[in-house]
Image 1 (cartoon, helix red, strand yellow):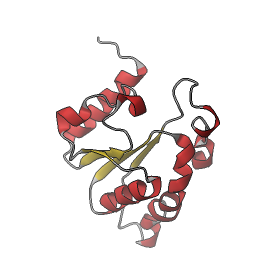
Image 2 (cartoon, rainbow, N blue to C red; image 1 turned 120 degrees about the vertical axis):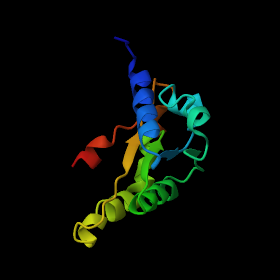
Image 3 (tube, rainbow, N blue to C red; image 1 turned 45 degrees about the vertical axis):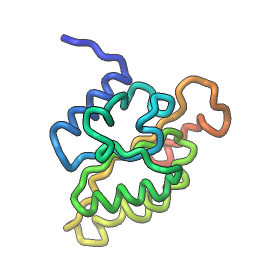
Image 4 (cartoon, rainbow, N blue to C red; image 1 turned 90 degrees about the vertical axis):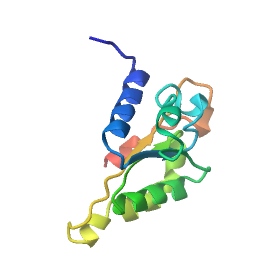
Length: 139
């Protein structure tokens, strides 16, 4: 049996998803940089190409909205938000789009999107990069 640390397990899960389904892709800020994602997404762009591991501009709302649109069109996006603090900028597409489309279309449409938001690793980021806002989405 092999043992993985937490980040290695996350990377392996992403790798397995990308290998098993060509509709899966990653999109978010800093996907090509270990400074943002640590080792949890390390080298996935090299293995699967930058067309499936998309390093987006700094626009949480647009990135999340694009992923939701892709999900509606049949893709299986995983959105990576490297700082939980700024996911608040993506609340509109999450709450008003992704959460509602299935109901709008009477259950005939799904929005299979995964949104991963990271609370900063270590303590060097201070008040603007280390908030724990996941309870808002849990409710």
